[in-house]
Length: 246
Image (cartoon, rainbow, N blue to C red; front, side, top):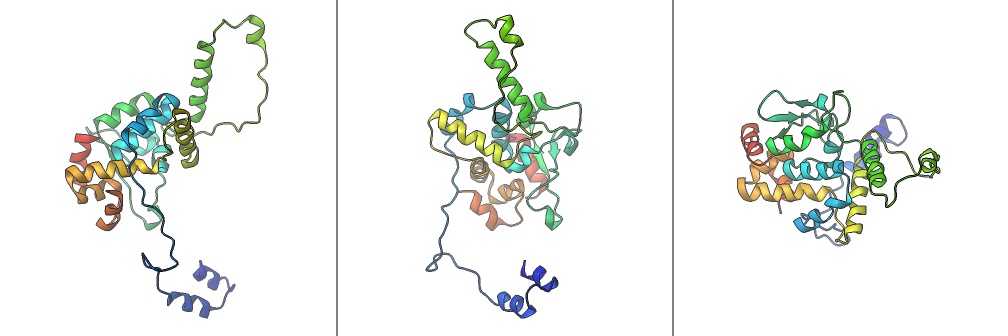
């Protein structure tokens, strides 16, 4: 940011040079506030929300558990970004965390993930697979089916009361996805958890069975140190594992 500010002549170049000499903060150093490590979600807390979320949200939860995808990656899934020509499908997110480093993120999708995805595949390849609009429509239809008494002709003709509720978007965002899970957790009366933790569920399971290098490859990390944080090989190994567990 300061390099850009120097280029725009907003701050003197000496400021940028001085900042480059500063050492980074060290873990355990006095005055440094450390965030709590992210932990996997207990399986019973995941299962508890199943009947409190839409089938779209539940599918995304299952996909994160099977593949280790980030929230943004799963919410933006489109058929246009998937290669389904082989036994093992692959997904290249249109946007991902390391795209500014010119790195290609390729996520293998095994048979279990494919089974989850098939009901959501759309004719329009550019359409997002998981639609909040469709989820809302399905909820409304379910409410109509569960009415205690049949709707009278006058009720069916009645114009719905306008509510100050934001219309659902064309796809979930990381925030709306997280909100759906947090709200479901409240209804299910389980401790609060968030979608990012599901990557840690995946990392822990893969590391325990296949090792840290495979966890690194499947999570899209460049080095083992980063993958180590998620765990509390190469493409071929990752593909073999995805066929077995994904």
